[in-house]
Amino acid sequence: MQTAVESPVLDAKIRELCQSILDRPDFTDLRRRIDAFMVDEKAKYEYQMLNDSGALLQQKQQHGVQISEEEIGRFEALRDSFMGNPVATEFMTAQQEVSRMQDSILKHVQKTFELGRVPTVEDMNDGSCCSDHGCGCA
Image (spheres, rainbow, N blue to C red):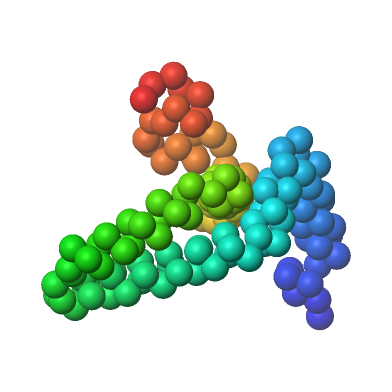
């Protein structure tokens, strides 16, 4: 017995969605920006250091440990150095765009399961008004 997850029709539609993503006019540029970051060892190192420092500060804050001005200064210096690198800022922008696409796809799929049908624009608005949906307010 074949399950819905193993369905050749569903597999074909998933591949079609993937091809639609690849066919987006901005996809090549997104990949270029991500790939440029992935080969920039300095940017990757600074990104790791920034993430590690931010995680440490967040952990201290969550545990009620006082964060010194020196620690904040080191974090801000790391962030400023990282954000001063155009490869890094383009990567961050590309990463945000990819994340928005992924979120949109996931929300549509989740809403489809919730409603038992393809969601409309109104369904996706969830009763809220947002400029992203072309309603003209915000």
